[in-house]
Image (cartoon, rainbow, N blue to C red; front, side):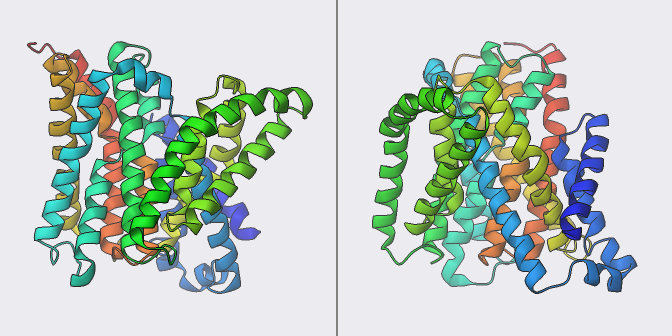
Length: 400
């Protein structure tokens, strides 16, 4: 209880501090964790740190809260996905999302695959899975961060804003599917054959986004009318979130994927009001999200595991892949070079999704702590620079 209380207070204070500097709350929450964790507090007063965050049963309980927080975070990320927007953008969104996914993925895949020693990976048997993970982590985006940046710049509802959002939605959908398969490859799934797991995953995704959406559209009006509002909606949506997460965990795909897909199906319903979405967001973002992001700083020592050249290499690969891929895709979709560059900077934001990916990979032994620290720093750098770079690009006078 003391751990949770301290983490929530520290997370809130530093989130507010980050907002004052016009940065995402997640940056302040991770900074709070780094100060509370072995990096700062553990170095200043090791005995007090270990008495406050001891290994054993309290650590298991905290890990349980963090795992639930991860599932919930992916659920609200799914709520952000609007399939109607994706369909409206059509060819342009396909170009931007495909190039913005494939080129960063290739950048992220080939460098770690060709130079595994530099990236600190010694297990030759899982080299392909490691490279696939790194490719996925370079390809994925952070929908909530991108949406906030576009709103702050006042271009969320513009043609380019809708293109960036819809492309990010497609990226995340495919990216999480690839990552779930990677976890199956390293034997962290069920005892099912990989082919059966992939078949069930594709079937579950297609079913939830077609039949599942139809069922939700029929059931939601009844929930809104017959049950206490918003309590009924909140409890049932989270219940089905956990059930979907449990199902994908059972078939050998990480629980987060089930939560994400249910979020997409629920968020797309015309009967889920913006007010209801906001209540779910507020509940998760202000209670469970801070616990997860503060816990990031408690897990590793960011000073001992900081590798300058590895971090710079990962940041370079992340920027190069997204700017080349998304910029080229947007240009082929019929936008000017100025808009294409701005869109590529917008798509470059990684934020929370990247960190969730990294933590799951770390827990499953796919990456070491040095790579994890570099990925967290890269996620923070891309989130912090995405808005200013996008604003700078749109304010410049470029040719068509």
